[in-house]
Image (cartoon, rainbow, N blue to C red; front, side, top):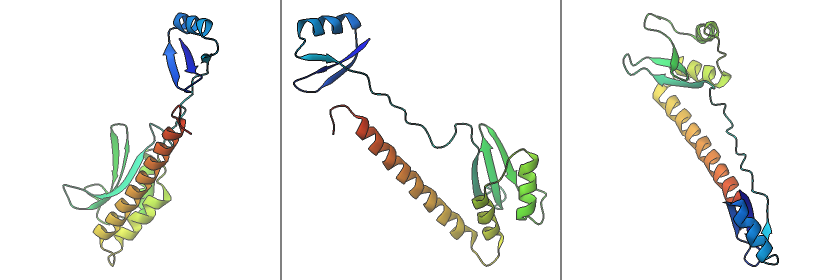
Length: 153
């Protein structure tokens, strides 16, 4: 496979047959040039098997909980039999499962546990912040991809 560009238009053609590319460059040396294919090395900022953390309402009990999911395994705190949930106990539960709870999740859980703060308000503000972050990352990736397009610039 070879990558070539038409010199007059600057238009690249990627992964064409090597024999055809050699023939074209031999026949039209002033019009066709060989180029190196661009490398697309866009890496995710998050590791594929990294745990996902959230503070959410349990759909069955309506209690607030910290949920950590890795692949198809979930660990939740507090459990059904927990009477008085607290941040220290949550950190211990996840540590026993082999995971360190991010400080932001512990802070959010502590804020939700305070009776003066409406849990729905805290969760909604967290959700909005996550959506803004995801939108910002999406627009950055789109800009990177547009910058890599051949013939642009």
